[in-house]
Amino acid sequence: MVFFPSYKMMQQVYEVFQELDGGNVEAIIQEPGMNEEKREAFLAEFSAEREKTLIAFCVMGGIFGEGIDLKKEQLIGAVIVGTGLPQISNEREILMDYYEKRMGEGFDYAYRYPGMNKVLQAAGRVIRTIDDVGVIELLDERFLQSDYRNLFPKEWEKRLVCTVDSVETYLEKFWEEKQ
Image (cartoon, rainbow, N blue to C red; front, top):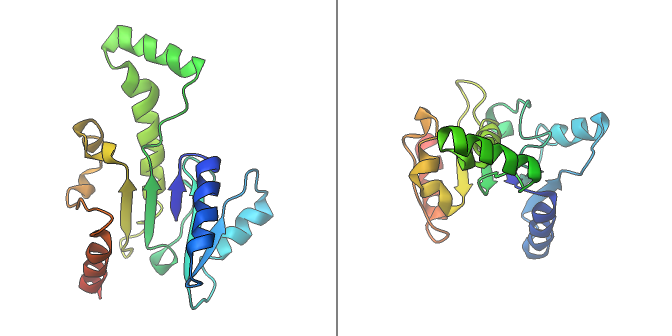
């Protein structure tokens, strides 16, 4: 699953992916306002027999970002694009001002913590049981900052930082070690 901060970004990346994909991957995309039947069909794709890899394009904080259980090989990875920060709004600015005046941590309470909650919820889709194995990729340099790293769960202590050029090598090594 690839989680995006907005439908707009998800759609843009999906369209580029469709143009560049050489037919090696099956891709599905979350739609706004999916009814129960469409949600069930979307999730059923993870259990279907297939010869190609399945990639699901989803919105962080959306219906597939929490409360779903895809176990074992049904879901072996999540790519999380961005820090999940909520959009700037009057409500958020009032919250930020309130917490800034009282605790000096307005940005954290209005934006960073709600964003990281969405990130952690999305990441939590990968490991659902003790038998699950998977990879979580966080795509945003802000995750290297201590303000974000300090919010990671202790289970994430063994993490690697890689670049576009090295990610394939790291992934191959990870899965070879799990064989």
